[in-house]
Amino acid sequence: QVQLVESGGGLVQAGGSLRLSCAASGSIFRINDMGWYRQAPGQQRELVATITSGGVTNYADSVKGRFTISRDNAKNTMYLKMDSLKPEDTAVYYCNAAIIQTMPYIGHYWGQGTQVTVSS
Image (cartoon, rainbow, N blue to C red):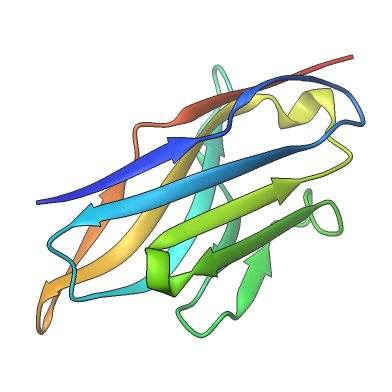
């Protein structure tokens, strides 16, 4: 079985920074695309950023220039560095990954989420 575990969330003042981590474990042959999503209370889950296995990144307009997604393929770990945080960034942040356990089957997995709260 595969697990994704997020860490690094917390409470921070507006303008501050946090770094989230997402570690994948279990029987993994290869990890393809990975991404961060977030869900604020009463709102739908939305895309924050994605990264391919080759390091190509994509960001939501709301976080461009403030957030940086990266990954360490050797460690099966993805990161999200969040700078210049705003109260509207407050949400539960989830990681997602497309993982191949046995070729050619790809499974899509979610972490349990980590809370990020930005105070004004």
